[in-house]
Amino acid sequence: MSLIQVKDLYKIYQMGNTEVRALDGVSVSIEKNEYVSIMGPSGSGKSTLMNLIGCLDTPTSGEFFMDGIDVATMGDDELAHIRNKKIGFVFQTFNLLPKSTSLRNVELPLIYNGEIKAHERRDMAISALTRVNLGDRVSHKPNELSGGQRQRVAVARALVNNPAIILADEPTGNLDSKTGEEIMALFDELHKQGNTIILVTHEEHIAAHASRVVRLLDGKIAVDELTKRGKS
Amino acid sequence: MKSFFWENLRIALAELWSHKTRSILTGTGIVIGIIAVSLMSTLINGVDGLFEDSMKFLGRGNLYVEKWPWFGDEDWWTLRNRPRIELDMADEIKERSQYAMVVAAERGRSANLSYKELSAENIYIHGVTANYPEVSTVDVEYGRFFTESEDRTGAQVVLLGSEVAKTLFPQGNPVDKMIFAGSKRFRVIGVLAEMGKFMGAFSNDTQVIIPLATFNKIFHGPWGRRSITVKVPEHLVDDAKEELRGVVRVLRGLKPGEKDNFAINQQNAFRQSYQGIKMAIGGTGMIITALSLLVGGIGIANIMFVSVKERTREIGVRKALGATRSQIQGQFLIEAMLITASGGLVGLIISTLISMGISKFLFPANMSFGVAFMAIALSAGVGLFAGLAPARKGAKLDPIEALRYE
Image (cartoon, rainbow over all chains, first blue to last red; front, side, top):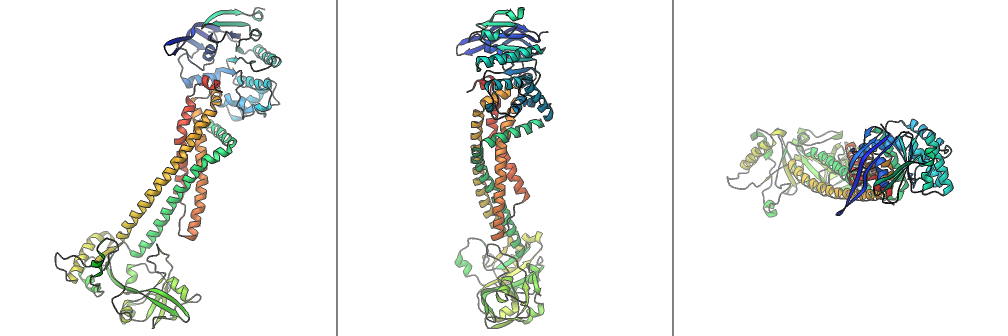
């Protein structure tokens, strides 16, 4: 079975009398170690799909298996556990806790895991920070770091739980182009190491890092193809 | 689950530390509430202790036949015109009553005492029968009580209350010294142990005790208190009171239908009256302290709502990273309880200091372990109560919207 298997997924919002079909029958499969971009103009259902894949939301109808687990009908707390174990988030705005050090920020998913002892958490967090070349910034707080460094802390936080997928939502949106490229190089590296990466972006040159691109339009998949990189 | 408690405690400490002024101001409401509640309970316990101590002096199984009732709203003139209590009745009561174990009689009035150039004015002179120690608490610290033969013969001997002894004999042993009461010479045969006082009443400390026969010989006239104390078995005190009433009515020649022209007093009267006062003070106090804790709790709830709102995004991040509802709820509950429990602790320390001050200068009021425990439990409870709604609100936030919150 695929890592992510989605079939006939619908997400319908009721806005007063009008029905908004944010996702209108989406079927897609993503394999382990794939590098996929999800693209689409605003209102295309891109964010909705990302929230569903990130297990932050549940669909109105349809099938959704994550790593063989049926997550379509899960409750809040079950979804929280899935997010904790299977998904590493990287956000456009970093979303680090401003008063906590890099180490504490990266430890956070391990704390909510609930089964990892304090000293193990520390070791794991330090090794994740070392993987993103921030081994010397463990006790810095976010406001003592540059934008690129902050995003790398966020990537370390996404990595630390060894998740099934890394889900990055416009990860370069708040960075200048040079720093953005550095972050993308980091994702490329993580992909080479065997991680499954899903990028949500509206920028073609960012999407081009992936090997496959899924384009959404009006809640439906318009295009699902390999990129140049994917073909080579 | 345990690791989340420590984690949440750590988050709460960091959060409160980063908003020091806010935390202190919020906690102050609880500090005041806890001071009020613990001080209130301590004071009531202290007054209770005092009351019980002074009740020992009266004895639970004692009935006092007197002209004046201790409490009541009977017409003053009627009471005033009652014939006086003849203390000779004591022997007859002893003979006729089946319940009476001891019957003692006493009189009292004020007089001035002097020893050499020292004098004590307006001292209450207590003339009692030799069996008085059997119906009351008389601790003789030095010397001895008088004997029955001294009482019978009207010996001019006196026991001094501790205060009186200090006044007349600032240093040195008063026993066997001769003092003057008016123009009469008395030999001091004993000094009573200090007993403290309750609301300024019934204290042996400022009295002297002489044999009743001596009193009768020296002080003539109708003035002063006259009382016959009948000691009965404690558990039969109600029956005994009825019997005693009948006996005294016969002795005083009252016809059926005539009203009693005497009063039979007992400790109960004080107890009831005291309980009434205590309930009134305690009840009012409890309402005031409950209100102050409620106000403190509302303050906490308010600040916790603000805190949840300010940290919406943080909640979003935590939820995205896998925090469950109960973990988020726990985080804010522990924060609220940390404020109130610290406030409670500070309040407890302050009220302990205040009660130590009261003990030193006014009366014994010691903070008990029970009161301290109650104060801490109560303050944590207020935190739980006040934090619940804000914590639930935070726990229920939709992670998608919380992450988008600016």
